[in-house]
Image (cartoon, rainbow, N blue to C red):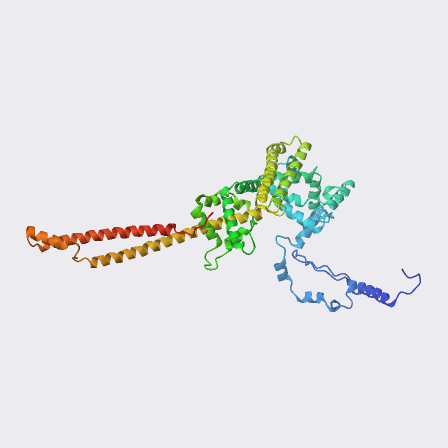
Length: 499
């Protein structure tokens, strides 16, 4: 409570009061310095004169410093761009009382707010009347979407609208307000300004939004149906389940199914004896040997990549926003039935939005079937978490198949080369051994020949040479058949697996 009349104040309070009174007396207002150019402001926080006493600033004399420094060079460096000198400004104000009055007019807006409006007005070249007409008729050709966004950001808030209403109640002239205040007040007079700008924003973004959302909906529908409709994918999952139970049954027992994320483990699991071979390589090899058609499953899965980037929750939220914008646009049409731009847009957009809502429901139902198909959690599963697993598995399957085929080609080439080398060695040996040989019946033929035509060594040599060539040809043919048989056995010799 305050002290009673006539009571003495405490010494500490008296000291503060004396300090304040002395401060007011010792530190009068600083003189106003006239500069040649308009300089930018230094946004510091000054100390009131009543609080200077006892601080370091009480010992400083900036007037003395300024007398010793030539500030002309400083002004040339820090002068504002495209600003007239102070003297020119003074002369113009003296010659134009209207301008002086406008400069001295009190603003209803916050300084930062007024600065933002000035920036916005520089970007919008249309006059206030042109803006009013464009907003009233919702003409995006006269008022581009970029300018609509700018206006939406500088709309008067509740406090500013209240100030403008009080100003209008006083029936003051608009000329008494600064330009930025007058601009915002005139905009605020447009009927349903905020709803109309929102509708114009929706109209301007509609085509881009639809082009972004429609492919996502279609991708989820197509990918979901391709997964549930692929018979070959089902067979591949069956083979994976068989391999998994074969490996786990001894220790963990058999399983009836597995989570779809387990396919990543199949891709990454490497053989202990050869780190270049994975479990997927073995599965791919079995499919190639026993189930040729099953390996086409990867081609049956479509739009996995696009569907892998979709979140149904976010997609649903985006479509709800479009539906809400369409509803607001239709409400605006009720209040402005003669607006041809608005009517034309609604006739084109409303059926498309309705179809989009139906397609979204179809996408949800199709994906729900996929989730139930794999036994996943309906609350947690999303296209961007489930489809990427299938996409990675499909890509890894194709890669493993290509690697297996490459290994087979290399093995076959090495086998052919080895057999060819063996054949060459055999031919070389045969050529070295091609000398006249004694065979069964050779002596009888020799005696018969001598009896009939006398002794002819050349004839005997010819007969021997023909027999050697015939024998070599027979051995070469046999060797060729052996090569073909071994090559065929190499191609068909695989581990015996029952599917």
